[in-house]
Length: 247
Image 1 (cartoon, rainbow, N blue to C red):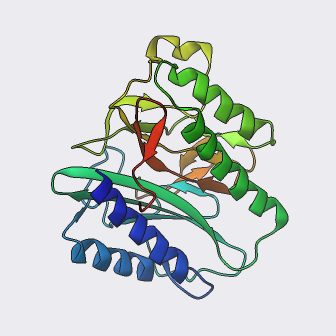
Image 2: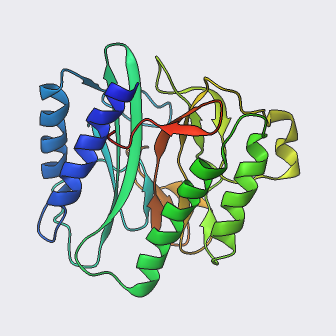
């Protein structure tokens, strides 16, 4: 899984360097596909079925711009100064999966947009720091939620993290918030678990909807911008080992 995570990290690092005004997300897709192929991996997202969608997902990355939260399909729209783009990448290598996401600023962004990126990244860092054996996931999720909502941002409820291993989506589900209705789904963290933790944060209200007739792109209902950061972590005897940090 660490080897797959290194490929994902390489993709996100390279695409982060390429993000600038005038570049299209289709160009980012092309480069991501090259890196994955050169590494001997396969793209996890390409060909995924979705009962709400008109066709299988057609790309190896999700590229979600501004008010898009997740599952944006790369296209020929040039990025412009002040945009943000969330890039999510998944790779299978030698039977094991890696999955991570980053949100990149296109040139200079407003202070409030930069704060959105910083808070979302901090929520992920909190989860990595607070995950350890013997805790329940709900305890960690509460801390993530407090960070986000205490900054007057929204935590997306409809999409959550997940277990990961030989398949991209495995049990358990990993929400980035906690409420009493989730008590029966909460679980204890144990050594050997591999979790894809991925806070999705909105600058306004937390509600989302489908953004177009493809059935893939998910956008905020109120049109506010969104950020998305994700890493895969392995729970160890004394904390976590991040498998998608390139180490």
